[in-house]
Length: 444
Image (cartoon, rainbow, N blue to C red):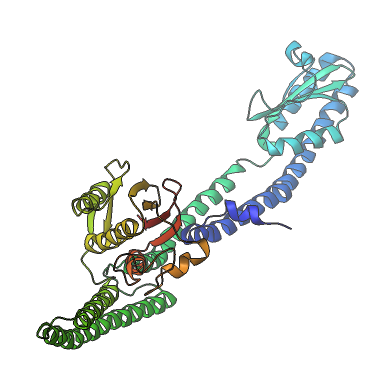
């Protein structure tokens, strides 16, 4: 059987599923107990009490049948009314004589048993009324002396207040469900705190987290703290190592530049100077790539369109042909502006390097926002887009290394920055300009 439809209606969150695990058994048990108790207990008790009442009504019928006249029957009935607690009328009033059939409220469950028991044992009954007065039962019985109306208390044929047990069960169920809800909330709170801390760390933010909760949650929390500490140590060690590499490499490069500047000008010297400059750019690009991530800048809450518009205007002042296509302000987001600006500028620079013009579009949704940079260049083949985001990758002819001075780290840096924000970089075909579309996807 296919149960996929069940997954669509079931709660998706841990809190909803845990609450369902607690509430569903309680409700099921209450329903089963209620149905079984009503059917087997109240139904049996009601049938026994009604059968006892049948004997008394049979006695009234026999008295009326044996009486010589209707007046004698009335006198004998009056004596029995006082002894048995009945109200009898012979012949029955016209209003009772007009009624044919039984009357019962829809929710009167025990009334079904009362009606069936009376009809099974007293075929002469014309009608039974359980509606006119909730506390009384009116029976119309055919006798040789006419239609006999018998009225007696409802409590003599069915148990009184059967709903009290149900009300008590519902009240206790609600109370226990509330207690379970409070307990469940306290148990799930550490899990939610751990999830928020892990999500924030994935976006490059450190939030205070203290291990708490059940043993399993504490184990997961301790493992998370250990993992976060190891990652922070690795980032710190990498930064220190790269700082040393930067110092060690820049010193000989500086000596080479100084030595070349003191040599007579010649084609060979110019070629060597270009090689030294290229080595310097490679070192700078590598260091920039390695340093991007959680250590660059502090998160800030800024207005999205204002940030995008500022980067585009700076690029325009730098001589790049880029245009912002529509963005209405009002939405804010939390991110590291310096790191995200670097990623955005890399995408704009690539678009201008390999195309004639670029356009920027911004779309804001419920789950996040997207900044897309479109160009009219040759684009990148779909099967090579993943390769294009790898470090030190330069594609030819889609991304010709002879154009510009890139070393194949622009897209890698942008992708790394977006991953540190919990987002991603997506490459596709631009429907606007026909070239490449580089889309920055960031969650809220």
